[in-house]
Length: 279
Image 1 (tube, one colour):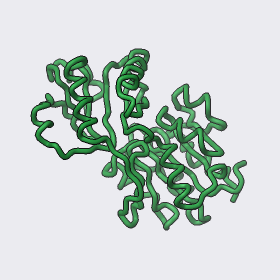
Image 2: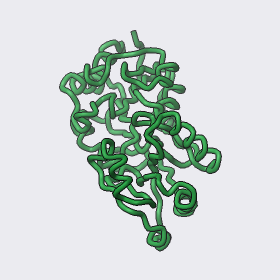
Image 3: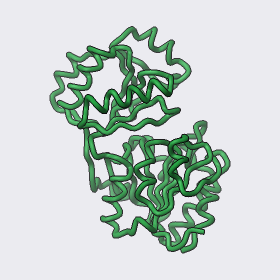
């Protein structure tokens, strides 16, 4: 079905890995991905996760140089994992973060937020109430009260991504996304994680923009590439590859622009899609 493929961009959460086993890749997926590398097809993890949350997965699927490159933090960083060499990065700087945090403290102190993919969420409001409110979602995280005064002392600070939860309702989260985007044009904001978790990066940073940079670096024709994903943070990537494939469990907006569909992560949808590739 898919001919002359040069590279496959693969999301992690609910795509290559399941919500239950987010650090382990199924045997079927591993075998098919390694088979791609044997056939000299670039296999590129493309995720919103931070580096430390990718290493274990990468080690499970890496076979040769055709799996060396990883795009993470929603495209803020491109790294050759094998050489531990950053080839591109664009981060939110101290002043941008400070202005945004001042806005949260003044207008939305009940929002919770974190930097990159830290296991710690912060809030300006009452910690106990906030933790109870989001208990079902934050069971694996610590929630702390944030000090703007302490942050202001840092001066030297940058982060590839800021994550925000302002509501557990999808419709309200969409309104919050628009509100932030209108007020902070230097940010790029996408939703993921049940469409209530908002991921903020520097303007121009997307999985798609990173894929374009890496394709140029590797001399790839993006028309001959595949993207596999499930979330709205995959939309920019889907728009620039030749074969965008959505998981069965994908968010509705992504399903609308996908040209192809595969099975869910639980049913090894990545492996099933790879089996249809003809080199």
